[in-house]
Length: 209
Image (cartoon, rainbow, N blue to C red; front, side):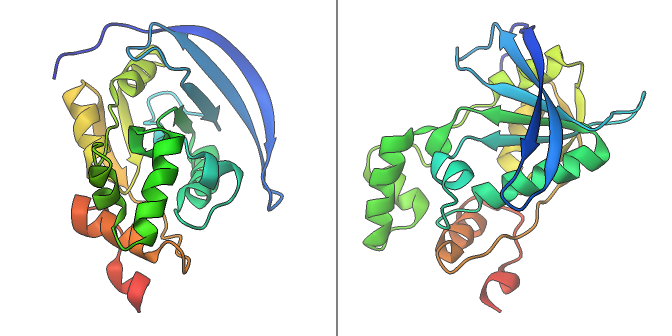
């Protein structure tokens, strides 16, 4: 994979955050110039990375339905909440990437939901719409990490593809650390498909036992 050109820091601003359960954290939010895809991705820094330490990093793809409205059809909202607390404790960055629906966009994601209601899994539904099962590219994420001088990271993710792409883009992933399993009656098929189709690090016995 060709290495991306450099991105530069555009601005930094501190924002206090309060989650629905009352958890509070302060984020330093960074914006960028020169990102490969031209999207308005954000890096949120939490906690303190000690000199010589490896930051904990999560690449979190935007999910309006889960992150904002609390949809139970996915685990995105709970993963976001978990990631903020774990990064605040360890020190590192949450990259909030504008990749709704694994890169297919909000309207297409809702169309895929309708197909899932007829029996398709999340990947089959994307394919039935003529869309990639997972259209995400993490070139901009690698650029952001380079601009933050975070070229060696511990990656908070269940998704092995994120680690593979970052490594191909020149980011050293020291460890890939799974998130918790955030199960609901509405997302069990979604989580099972992640394990069976793309090898996510989610323990199936915990989903069905």
